[in-house]
Image (cartoon, rainbow, N blue to C red; front, top):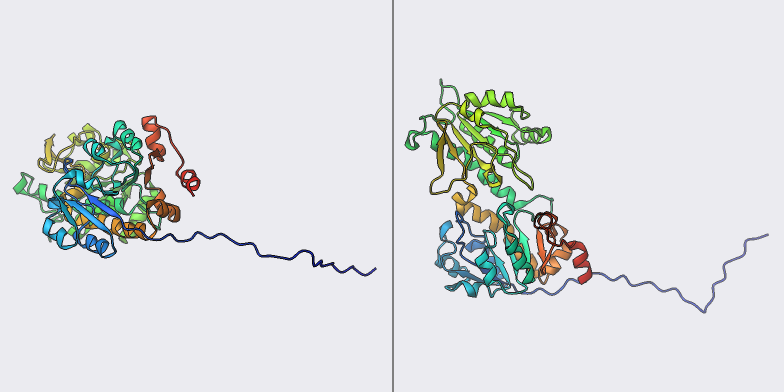
Length: 404
């Protein structure tokens, strides 16, 4: 029996279904405010005059508090020529709908904050206070942190830049404290022909460790690197492209190497919590008199047992005849370079935010930006902060989907 043909009835017709696409919203002009940082040891500014020139040319308004760029050697004249409005009253800055800071939000800032403001700043989880977070939540603030902001490659661009600065600066700092001018033992980092090179130990093979190793090798020092991650040691080896002396952190080997070194650098990262202490007081006691310890990980508690926080004004102390440099926020000592690095990340982000019609839209379109948001319209969207302070956590993806 022949297969019957399909019957096509004229009573119904085929229609294509419409697919609803996300329509790109109209751009909006941002009203950006930059307050002067009053917090301890902070010399950086989050946007340079060049970046502000670009933002103003794209139709955004920028208000900046007088002398805000002073620490990074930018004058009010530089900013006003770039098109920013110089403001003499801090309260006026907080009338802006986007606040950009290079230091964490302080209690004083919380008082001045207007409801529904967007803040872009670092968090510094170690010194974050619960009441500051709660005040920001009450004011329905949207906050984006430097530390967690990711770029298209999934890396944290601001943290990376700051780590590169800290790593490169570490050897310059060590060289300074080895010289007679600073009561060091009068050794030139790297040595010269006929004199054995200075011995540098680096604990931690992250970005800071890698850039410290690059600078030390360029100066002619002998470098030995310790890290418990074989992957990080391999990556450092490949990135530098020179065969290096590497080891996992084994106390006996580490202790033996520290005994004979001239410079020891602590560059371990603590992840979300405190940095592990891997160098005991006994190990430091065995080190040569006049040798230098630079503990970059002091930001997260430090990896030397003898480390104590110091300041840019009084950066060193001596214990067991070993010079300790333990200044948190090393990039702030190189404020102009650090400001340019932060500005290079934030300026394109702010331009894109304006083009996309506001922070809500950019979070919707750019999944990487979501990782930086820890408060969204007053809801806490960072798991670590919610666990630490016992505050209610809300999933950001659900929040923004429900707003659509």
